[in-house]
Length: 165
Image (cartoon, rainbow, N blue to C red; front, side):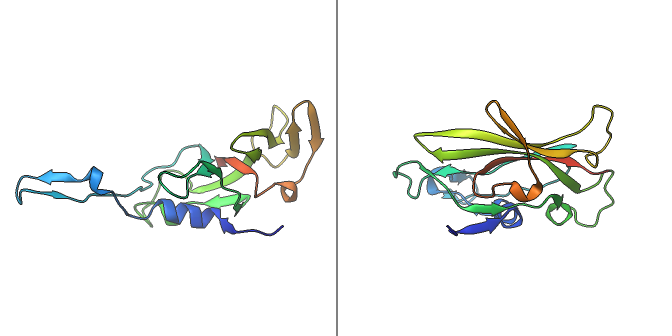
């Protein structure tokens, strides 16, 4: 069933938009003697070797509404470049902004209960890159071979990327 969908890029862009905070978060200005609304903004200044992306899969439609599972499909790439999200675009970075996907945790079910599975690239202990690795699906005691095409964009909950240097 094809329901609503989005992309990881759209999620990253949305999370980096300037957000106006509620009146409850206003700050008193001594100069004008009034409470002023505040904003917040997320910026990327530096990047880690391992990037873990937690997709928001549970939320409320209203502040006082019930907690529900967000079942939107999120298309995520096997190779991710974060250069466009860096605070200082075009600045010569000491490290790469490119990442490769190596694991996904999935949540199947709803708020009241569910089941977790995982997909991951397994590499020989001596491997320095993921090129020699193979995708596997881990479902309790059952482990089976998988491919990147087998990744479930609707159940993906946590994405694991490693920097490509």
